Image (cartoon, rainbow, N blue to C red):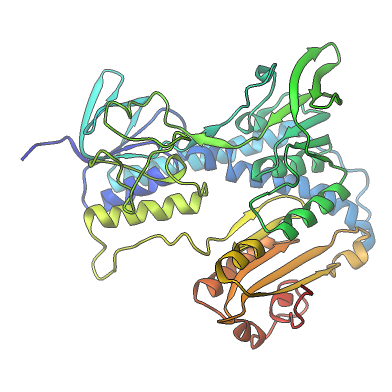
Length: 455
């Protein structure tokens, strides 16, 4: 039998790679994890965690405004960008240490450096050559920068957390999660924000009602959202950056963020040498067990899936470990269902959603019943703000099962996470109707919707 240094070699120390390495080592496997950057990957270092911290920071501006309606006189608030950056960096450093300690405690060897596949069982890390029975590629994604004149003057989302100085005028190019979140964050922190989306709506993969409603609410905060707008070139001038848009419109900015999607991080890691096939977008092609075209090489997370979500990567990691090493004693082997995965967008106001959009539900189930409500939350009856909330249920008419649940409003992510369990369990509209609501909350609206929306 061929001998290997390790049972599992993991290339990439993000959420999926760390989870797979740790779980496999806890099962008794010999595991090494190779990472050239800080542990935790995009999510911990330049994604979910710092983004949510900055979203909280932006929310305080709204809270200070609202306080007067509740009898508070807080004076003139002042925001210190340097303090926020320093405190965020300290917290991210703490999390990096936790990841390292977890791996060490599980018995994983962490190898620092750029790993390249020399063949389907070998990773070359500098002068060191590591062999493994299995190799897991979990290198995540990288920002995509469109090929336009002056693109070197633009920033990716990875660079937004440590900008210096704080941009008084920010142009955000894109209409997805990242673009919409950073537009909200920097507007809340005091920047003048223009968001350019080349299509007809932001969050184009979301339910259309959600996209349109969110665009309206973001506009209320002062974001200049321009749809069907595309940048042709960027140039530096004495007054900052100068953007020329298709059609001749001009914009000036202190910083330009290209949040135009992420691509699988598969370049320069030797996948071709290992016989690993990539698709047209550069993602690793895998089967239902995350195995690539090279039988000993596996891939998961953003490098191989369209669902670029941290919890998806960690779920795939646990399913892969069960597949390779068998499930934990007394447990069934874990699998990942890609139906009814909840997600949130931390805009202001935030979005939470799980299940099918109305459009997708009609295509899949045929006849659906839609329930929708829009209202001013109780908080804003005194706050003086005009922010409103939208909630929507999509029901398969034949089975009465709730197949889509969507929300724009405060705490949307927290609320939808709980309802995601109900949708996974197959809850019907009758079950929703028979559930007692918690009053007064926004969440109770989901169990008190009675009248279908007009067709």
